[in-house]
Length: 414
Image (cartoon, rainbow, N blue to C red; front, side):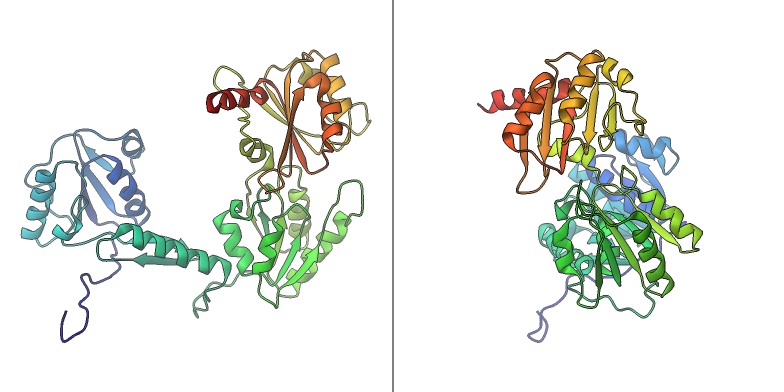
């Protein structure tokens, strides 16, 4: 306390470490956490440690840093600009910090931050901004505040109006994930917060629309299965017209835009019109929805292949591009999307092609949402089970031995 005012413990500054020697002593999990940020800053990192974690060794093997596989010794800090003492031996960390102080090199001591001459803030990126928070030695507090600030920036509740903020142009094709609004990617959410126009699908996470600023125009491009639909050409035209008018357009889709989402058709339409497109991949429902229902699409010794199949065209239809005979011969996992209406036909076709009728099947409706429902039955019975349960789109169907693994977890909990 100085003159009645609280005295800051640290002076927060940004270090330009690109091309400069940084020494990290210790190759355990603490170093594993710190190294990526140093490397992304362009630091010339040298690691001193007799052993490392596999992830740290992979960084050395790839040439991203230099690893000296031995104990720390005097002289290791010569020419360094910054030092991190990250071993699990307090005496070694103390020696590193003492050597650094004599050489007037700032040093982070991971096991006792107050005894070093520098501390590592909780950091995070947002659209070109590097946010750093220090809390006087309470790391959980600084991490919590950092996360809150980043969330606020991403949602737009905290304004980011810097004069040098880069202009976003054209169209961003954003995969919104399987439905839970928290499963959109960080980049997707950032771009959504900067949209002037949002063209949104029915299966995109709808709660995110409530976070948009009042000036944002929302265009409903819902493609309700077997019902009212917006023509793809009309969607393409809307994207191009708004982008050409100088508006930043986000095309918000469910799942991943390139997995049965017609995303590349929209990219081609924009490219032909000279409109730039940013593609943001999404968490695909083909894998995330089964995961939410405790169905792993692969499992060691159970499934060595996964095939994702569109069910919008049934077997036998002249438009079908699926080799159902080949699928019937597979022993692994078949993930069927958009297959609720013809699920009985799909099951019969697979059984005729060689799949056993007792193959486990799980149908997950509205996966990752609070309304999620799961129906499990053998392949021969799944159509009746789904009908009895009133299953309706959107739903993901998983066919294969992995669909029966949840019984193991249920038995363990019971």
